[in-house]
Amino acid sequence: MTTGDKSRALAEWAFFVLMFAVAGLVSFYLPSLEFFVVMLLPLPIMLILLKFDARYAILGLAVAGLLFFIFIPPAAVFILVFRYGLLGILLGLLFKNKISSGKILWAGMIYAGVAAFLYLLLSYFAGNNLFVLGEEVRSAFEQTMAAYRDAGMLNNIPAELQESFGETIISTYELLFPGQYIISAAALAAITYFFARACLTRLNYLLAPGLAFTMISLPWYSIWGPIVGLALTLAGDNFSWLLVAKIGKNILYMLFWLYIVLGLSVTAYFFRKVTVVWPLKLIFLVFVLAYPPFSMAGLVLLGMTDPLVNYRRLAFPEQK
Image (cartoon, rainbow, N blue to C red; front, side, top):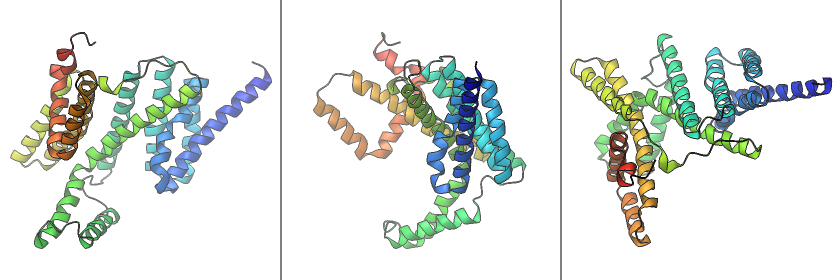
């Protein structure tokens, strides 16, 4: 490599590191942009790894981490470096080794969920109550419920129950906050994966075939998830182990959304595969949209049982 090539490579490396650092600071100081920024945050580190190698990516992450320590609190540095920076390294390694799209997606989501869980765990051991909202957040919730009440959106609820209804909403959010935090991190990692794939496609990078939504599935042993969640919930309620019960309910809450997605995948597969006239399909869609509770219960049931039954292969044995 000539001196000019080395200088150009160093400039590219510094540019990607600066992109990661600036994006991280923007996500901290401009909360209104945080959701959009963090979706793209792992990409600069991922591109460093793909263009150079893992050593340069780790070095760039370390340099950015030092910059973060100067301007933002350590807790935010942990999130930016370990949740988003290392996610970029993980995605880069998987893309570089031509791993299948499904495995990359699941690996990214699992890593993001584990990183979010570790952050909550460290926060808990630091003395923070994960099941109690801060004063600012609680005040914002109360103001929102008051606005709904003033707008007449709670008129169907008896006046004497409206205040307790608001408290129930807040307490439910407090109870399920850890699960919501983890599942949001996993969903954000999935969005990041699709952004990364689109970016690499634009750069003419050779990729494994994309993952079809209708082919999303879980292994049979995933059935242990709801079993564990239900067992912890029942044990915690029966023996007054409040923390155990809360953990079990959060596990069930996270699995609820996972099974919704899996149930949608199975439904979309049969909707596309089964040959019927379009009016019947349209009637089915109207029924699904008109009765959300029934539809969601059906999707959860489909998602929960599909790992054991494998409906797609059962109906179409030739399906691999």
